[in-house]
Amino acid sequence: MAQPARPPYVPADTLTPQRDMSHAHFRPGDQVVILKGVAEGELWGDAMTVVAPSWHTPTDEDGWRLRNPNGGEQTFITAHPRYLVHLSRRCPDCLIHLRALENHLTPKVDSTDTVIDCGWYSTTALNQLVHTADARDGR
Ligand SMILES: [Zn+2]
Image (cartoon, rainbow, N blue to C red; front, top):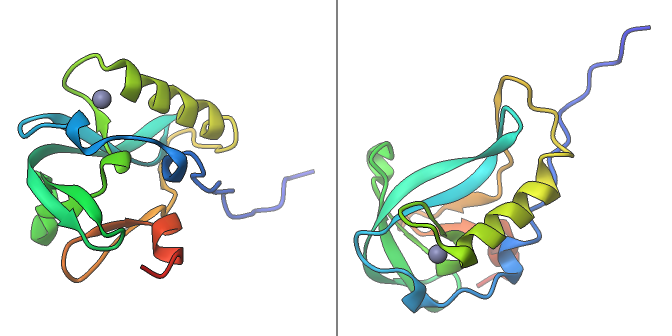
């Protein structure tokens, strides 16, 4: 019997909204990734460079302006520190979050050869990146 076709199950990212990450954890020039989904059984996301401090209006908290080399019209966006994971150095704090998210997600997502964007983030007209959990607060 063939399995019926069904849309991929896309779990919510419940870990990032709970993450306690200070603004000072990041500095201009840091390489970071914003995790957005799963590809080939591993976490997938956009790699960016931290540019400068910038107010994150959706949360009314200090954020960081980021440069996304593949961002097109959204080359520069502002994100909350808890959305960011360090790429540039071995960082225990970021690694713990990465592993936790990986354990939370990859067993649930059947992604053999395709990139699955879980849709956790949207970008406002003012190029502010917003996690779905922050958008729901209506701020
Ligand atoms: Zn870090």
